[in-house]
Length: 470
Image (cartoon, rainbow, N blue to C red; front, side):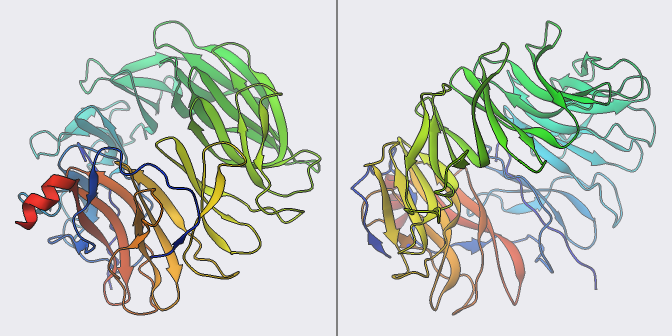
């Protein structure tokens, strides 16, 4: 039996007891038009788990990849619940093997991706969602070998990425979507070995930050404006740890330098474009997000016996502190899924009394509160996949008799609403990857009969929902 492998990427493309204070309603009047999502017509059904894919927003259309059992894994396009429907964009590699597009990355009104057409190897492609507008950008390593582009990121209207060729090894490249506008930015490690840049991240200052290898013994945090030579901001040994979690917060860039030795620690560091500064050290550190010019994250502090809790930092030692001890004592509430909506932060946490439920914070201890208890008692509904879209919070939660299904909230008190069940009874559809494109919210969900499929929920400005109902 053939295993079809859909995953989706967008181009150009809900009851409970609310315990928190009333928050702002939908910031621009968008809302789901009803509670019933529909599987996308014309998309091949799944016969197994989808391959990992990144969901990216575009304008009015959804570009994704799917295997219909005939063409192999290729790019597809959909207009969601309206428009012309769903169809194959282009068969880049004729036959059942497929071109297997990956790393779909929007830049303006186009999407760049990596694919193998069977002639040029894995190279950089670009698409505007039409067959005629989907083409190979440039054959960086001529022939069937392929340059294997990775770490694609948009910055300043251009695409930056890493790729390898016979002369330079794997180095930093950029592209405007044309062959002549696609070129090597800098050969950081001269010769065929290359510096293998990764974690390409656009900073708040407009520069590009990334991590690269150096002489086989070090990893370095680098900064480039794409014109001047890249500058080294921090260096550490390649053994026993790494550099990770690059995140722009205002004009600062935070990152983590970790070690896996016996005294394993994670250093939170910050740079404003120059040499980095140590902010604080933690036993655990994850889920970094930016809100209101500050960094928020889940961490267990050095010498702290309270377990993982919610922290914040303004980039200084004095301004780095625990927001609230949600689970008092050594337990730790283990905040996860930190998601910013408006001026508030939503996350999943366990206070030891209500189980893992949805919490909200304005950044202060008094403003960090249990938002909703969907499952009363210590069991909890374990919210996952928190995603803020146009002032609405989408997520999945597990409740008795319904399994894990999709929910939505406007962020106001009493606004938790379940969407219609996609898997019957106690089965779980386990929705994931919520994203808006045009006037729909798309996501993956499954049931025993069909496996995981791509679903669409009409999602529009409120007056458009009302107009459609007339």
